[in-house]
Image (cartoon, rainbow, N blue to C red; front, side, top):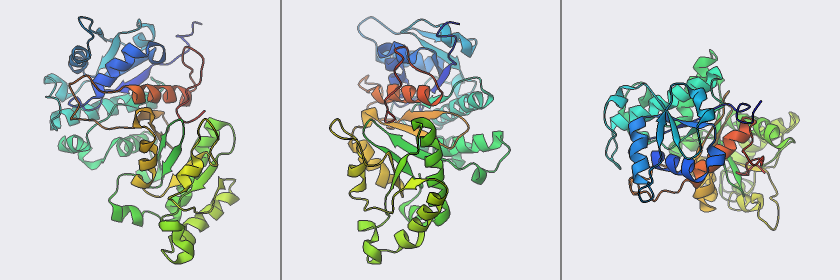
Length: 367
């Protein structure tokens, strides 16, 4: 069996066609052909061809090939962009203008995710890498997408339906990773008020167990989980809040009884520095459990958004994405950086048990 035959195709969804998604996809196929071998785009051929024109170097335009079968992606030559044309009402229209929120772009982005997720759930592809979509555009697309704040919640719903479960029976968590830091979030896209209310014993315990199981499988050992407190100084013994003692610490204690290696709640202003791995020293923790979205994402993105990868833990499929948004202000200029997308592909390879051509496991925060 050839090396390429041992792979399964990996789907990359195009994201919002008014953003930078298609541009960074074309750049990734152009600049990292070894890492992108066997990948294809679940998207709109016209959108990818427009992106190829935007990022063209002189008179050299990347060819965009329409697939008749996703398995053809395994045999495509390097430095071309294989595309599976997703059937969507939006594909009958020309690509929308760059930088504009539209229901058209939202529907196309959502339909690409649904197609790729269902393909992964059927086992037709090894997993999916999702280019950024715009949450406002997704909502403008109406039913069913108006019910979902973003990729994670949409994928959770699709996975639950595939397994005959309710959404609550298919819990997921978001992990953000780069070469220096990994962070898992207790809650994702909630208002600050709702995020505070989501710091419950059940949610913290569930987050610890999902993180433990996912990282144990990836690292081959029990991961060291650093637990961030909710309040300044982790509550300072109850002076600045009691959630650490009333909620977080009891959840940690029960998780420990189930084999989880987790710290007591730690001061959130220092725990990320303690967990950070650099060339000079390894981190004190393998991952930090953050209590809400911005608490965890700010330190990861500060270390370098161009290398960050978003991984959804708990799904019965592999899903990664770059750690940035649609960048409407940059769309159509050809200046967008594809590094995070390439890292997301590498991470998806690792999660699906595949290696890249050089036989190096992807770093992407999991080395």
